[in-house]
Picture 1 (tube, rainbow, N blue to C red):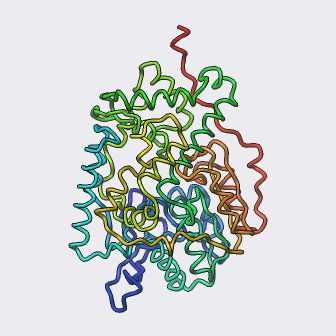
Picture 2 (cartoon, rainbow, N blue to C red; picture 1 turned 135 degrees about the vertical axis):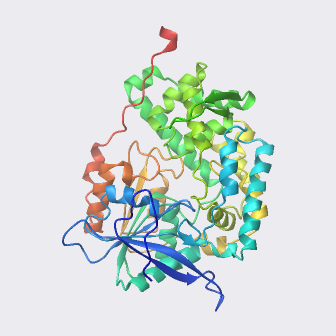
Length: 472
């Protein structure tokens, strides 16, 4: 049904509506939910008839806020762009935001990252959110990838589209692959960016991606003579600093990157690791060698400021409830805390167990899942997608969340897939890489024969080189 577009910082340049779907399709005559849909017209005067539908990451990210990035990346150059808020996300009804968790995250920059007391505070925040959502009658079991994919199938039907193209990033790739597996009708092509393979994603899996991404950053530094000479033996430096901070955390008061009142932050080993694994907005990959060297020489300010960026989250914009419903039903089951620790030890031998016990970006998730209490869905969800639909798989070599090696891995069951690795780019590749944008555009034009020629000449940007304190 038509509806006004959401009030966003950048007005939505298109028309909007609401899609009404069952909360739980197994329950006839159950409650329904509403999802905001935006249709952004193609820039071309003669667009192709098959639009592109976008699937947001997270899970829990705000799809509508991605529209400016998608337009700047040319995704709507020759085709209309369709963006739908996923069930539970901002601009959906209900919204599974957890301001309780946002407030915890703001306070957590001043706490030890992996201390049990920090975990207890996170669990209390998650439980308060769960209690509030369930008291409102929300069935948290229904906020999962299976239902999410069915929403997109219903959207295509509601819009009267014979076929369309799918573009998803991060969790949106898992969603896209699930959608392709369960609802293949009408899909002309699929592009997946920063891949989360549904058949293998789990909490221990996060350490494999972190190890690959760290290794790629350090290898790229080694390949640049200035970086290699200025920052020798980065793996050893990182291990030393993780161990040192975990044994003796630093408390630093710094202004956040965007300015404002100074913030007290605590840097321990877990905080350092998770600053590296984060999306790069607070600590770009090109700054990682310099930041580690500065830390080793007694200057933690660059890292402390990156940690201070988390002190002012946008309360209520990220749907932590959707994150927990997916993670606790689809990623956590079948493995234990001991499996996470084992994977961490394999990835980073010599690091403290207190750091390795927490999956990167998802600390204390098993404790949270015990209070979130949704059923195991892995038998339905932890399944590979086999399909002959043309698929483009885009990965960034500096991605510590979804390592670039998972792209070709996912392509094993997609015989008409093309996998590209973009050097020097982290998570969510297309908005950061003109080459990736070009490849995506050519793929949408010719899904079975995209032009990937620009990839061959790419190299990572030069790393930040700071003066050597020992040479002054």
